[in-house]
Length: 196
Image 1 (spheres, rainbow, N blue to C red):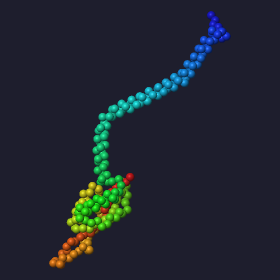
Image 2 (image 1 turned 180 degrees about the vertical axis):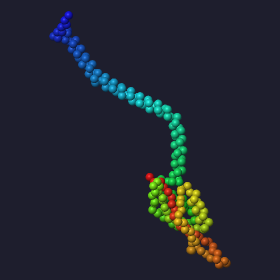
Image 3 (image 1 turned 90 degrees about the vertical axis):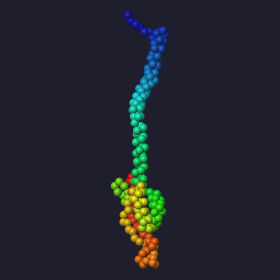
Image 4 (image 1 turned 180 degrees about the horizontal axis):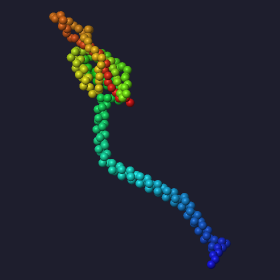
């Protein structure tokens, strides 16, 4: 049995043209619409799986979040208390206010407060100051006691205490006794700040 196609016959040619055009349209649709849509779908499914995995991890770690927040709050409080002892930077205005408040509370007068060059160490900086104060002997001791109780770490070196010659008054009744003696003390004060 022989099949012969006569392309000159419109009854054969027209259906073949329709089939050919339909095949070309189907091929173009598959190439330009279906394949990219499938690739996009596969990509979106991968992203969805990744996001679901991330969500599962987050949901598994969520109970630990409150514990971590509490630990963070405790650590922040501890850091703040350490910063009051060991500040991030040199705080001369705050230190001056505190020294003056302590001096007033103990009855001492600050006559000199000169910053000296800082000394850099490996992990911290020594902030040095040359200080001179004057007042009564017991007031001086009270002043040093206040300094010892500061939250800021303070070291005093090269402490020199002497009687003030300008305020010596000799009592007339007793030749060797003096009244209103004022002492003068000069020292080097060192505070510390962290090195960044």
